[in-house]
Length: 308
Ligand SMILES: Nc1nc2c(ncn2[C@@H]2O[C@H](COP(=O)(O)OP(=O)(O)OP(=O)(O)O)[C@@H](O)[C@H]2O)c(=O)[nH]1
Ligand SMILES: [Mg+2]
Image (cartoon, rainbow, N blue to C red; front, side, top):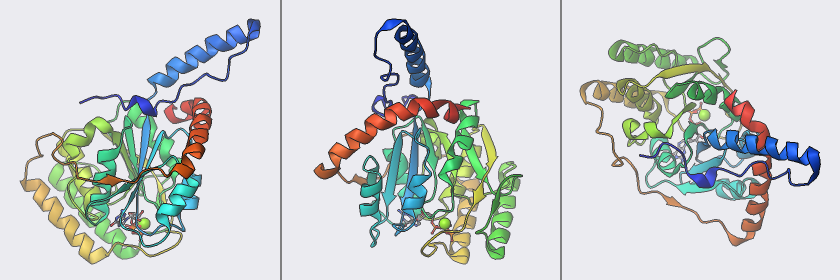
């Protein structure tokens, strides 16, 4: 499998320095260096599952660092204006339609569609802050395979965890640590990042909210180098939660037991679901091109931030 992401995600840097003279010769050398550095920088895809999140998307999109090369919104048959709002605010976003129901299936579809070297998965309800993305990328660049967000590390926290959820998360996390020899401080949290090359081992085929647990457990079973980073979870801004603590807690527990018994699936592409993708309407194509050019220029400036 190719380790480098799709070349189409790599905007060309250094185009701004084109004039003549000594000053511009220096600028051209600098631009060449920038271009080389930028080409070596891994590309980043953000995968965001959405189910009726139209009111939250303006806040979420506004906080995505411009160094993120690809944004994939995976919609779960929303009945509000999620798709229209996405098209209006981020005409460059790829809109994937999941083939079944549930957050797990949505993520599986988004992961299958992703083309970046690094994939970051985060929520669309305003609870996970996209501005934290560089914090997740840095350990990957320094050698980690998989980076987990944790609300229970110093610097992290949650405004959203109820006592019941907190207790359940702690109990299920303890089970995982005992059964798989991990030292996870947070199990059921939707903010994670990893190299795309890890996907065959993660083999995401589940449908529901057990998805994060399965991914975390398989990262351990596959022997990935896992690093946790502190993350702060806000309350969802608008709308209602899709999670039911008892129902989904039982699904998570069943998944943990099954993962303990069943060996890691053989790596391959068999996990990839048959998702579909919306085409970009002609009306936004011109806008998208303008944005791509702007992003290419901006990316040069954010590249150090993403890799520091
Ligand atoms: N595409 C898709 N997205 C989903 C589905 N269920 C949930 N999501 C999205 O997954 C993310 C997390 O779902 P939430 O309902 O916020 O669940 P939660 O964060 O565990 O619960 P709260 O903390 O109460 O918000 C959100 O961005 C949802 O829009 C689904 O069936 N399909
Ligand atoms: Mg939420």
